[in-house]
Length: 379
Image (cartoon, rainbow, N blue to C red; front, side):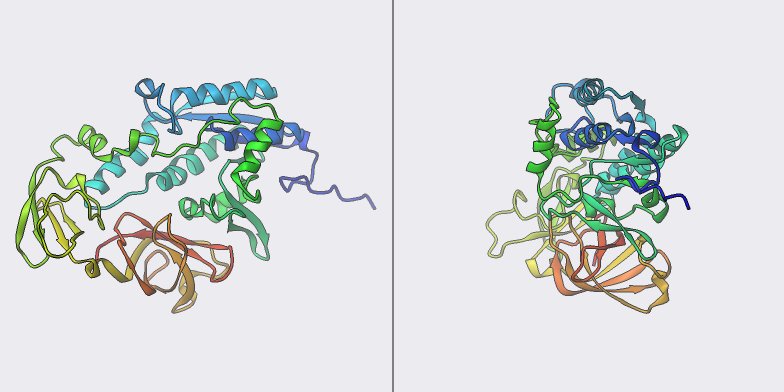
């Protein structure tokens, strides 16, 4: 009997040279290392970089993921490592799928997470289809998350390095997408390990700083971007206590977020006050004591479920959840209302749970991501 061909590092039963992989290259150190590593292992690598918005104004800006300088850096890595590289103009797709919704949900008093929508609607949808059009066997990215084979197929797991884990931003990855995607950095112990690899491959991006901001929001100034996208959004209104007292005025709801305490401009009060609600229709910023921020029941919709059996096959699921990217998972109970909607009960109340953020589900005590959804209304 002929011997079975062993699986290569990407999980295919053929030599690397016969395995085509599209690498989504942002120009940063992570995706550059992925591309260089796969090229060195002998894979048929094709690098693809997305131009997501007009980067003329952002050419010199450090710390954004999609600027012109990043396209140049990605192209240079491809030249150095000897594989083809393409730049795709996704500006219209990005505006329609990410930027417009970001503006609208922000104006709706929500606190959106556009990086999730970008992964869901642009990178893992349109770019993934492009990879298939290029006859690639799979698509690899520089995300810090792990794909592991389980009894029912590929599973999504947190990165080995909890400080770099990006699972919160990737909960909407579907089982079909997960079948096609690869995340070669997810098992690395630290970011330093990635930079060490970059230096080993001689990549000029080895010391490039990490991107911090949302790529189309320079310096984290959301309000200025919203004002450009939605003129008139910064209309003044009243700052109102939850008990109905008018405490002052503001220059636009878009300048505030749920849970904010500083910069309210309403000094001289005996108790510290926090933003507990943004009422866009009445142009009111509602403030109240800290205990008003505590939430136990979180309504979630647009759920992407990654469990082995359907979400609705049980009346409740005991899991851990994250309601913000920066917080550790907390114990919770999911009570499904349908395949895509549920109420999530937090066993310990959380402060500052905000519509527009994601609620991501994790296996209790484990690393597996069971999916997640979008928080959709206040308490």
